[in-house]
Amino acid sequence: MLSQRLSRGYRQRRRELNAPAATARRAGVLYGCAARGDTPALRAYNDLAGRHLGRPHGAASTETALDVSSRRYNDVVVATPAGRVDHASADALQRALAPAMTDAGSAALVLDFTNVEYISSVGLRVLMMASKQLRGREGRIAVAALQPVVREIFEIARFQHVVEVFPSVRDALATLSPAALTAFDAGAGSPAP
Image (cartoon, rainbow, N blue to C red; front, side):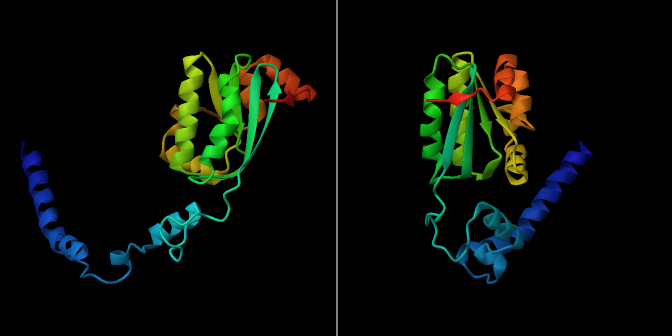
């Protein structure tokens, strides 16, 4: 009871102390990096995301191309995107994954993220929708070989609970389909539709 009253008093004092600064920020009175939203943390995030403060808001990145190649190993399709998965390239990823989503012969989809340097929330949404679609027909989706930046994004978004994450394509195939692993080791993959 006492701790609740103390914490309530603490919260109220904190609100009172922050109120003048918040009001000034809303009114545009404060100057400096905090008022502009140009903090070191924000700069680091924007650099990671490929955004720069000098570019106008909403301006498209020059690197919008996303190449996706797919191979079938027995009953598993392995798709290998290369580039950045962001608002400009998420549709390309969705179009590339569509045949694997509707193919009745594929029980699983493995995404080899060896060459993916960044994924935005739009790209995560594409993966989530693919996961839902595959689960609807008793299929599985896995992501393998995440780069450190992409791994951190997955961890922050807790996306390892949405799709299975493996250290390599071989590990993913070993878990999803032993027959696909045998075909992968033999190099007997065929181009996927």
